[in-house]
Image 1 (cartoon, rainbow, N blue to C red):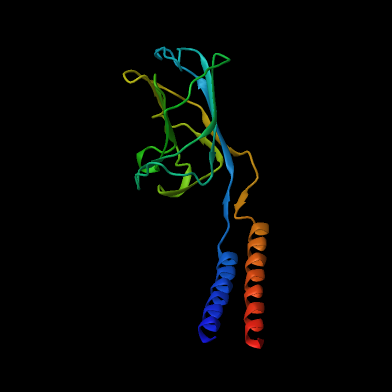
Image 2 (cartoon, rainbow, N blue to C red):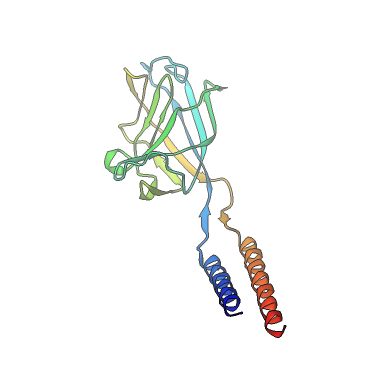
Length: 205
């Protein structure tokens, strides 16, 4: 009987602590952000799958405001994933996808790079995230391209000008949801109540 009482008491205590800790966990908010950029390739731009001198281009893609970092270099840069990438050249949508997306600290030029098979967009300007490179938070806003921005095919570098827009395209999501927490809490409470009922029944038997 004593062993059963102590075991039941421990289970009830653990369940109660789990309820408290579950409701005490802060919610993680994340927005989906759309990043867009457009411009005209300067004369002398090499012709690649993504570029041609004098042609207008634009691209857009989505990222999380609290991105999953794949390759952090604290104090310098980080790589992350993206979705819904679209690219147009001379008004035509091209079936191209970047190999990687890298964001940079202001100390090394800021903004971000998009690396393709045939060429790279190296966009410099303000740093567009706060926090550290292993735990960044991307900011919304409109950012001017700095003079160091260019397109390269791996050999030639041609300057780029324009603006990068980062805007929210979805409402924040919360993980876990309050309703889920409530269901978990009531489920644990119900389980602990059932254990207490069995405990009382064993004492009266």
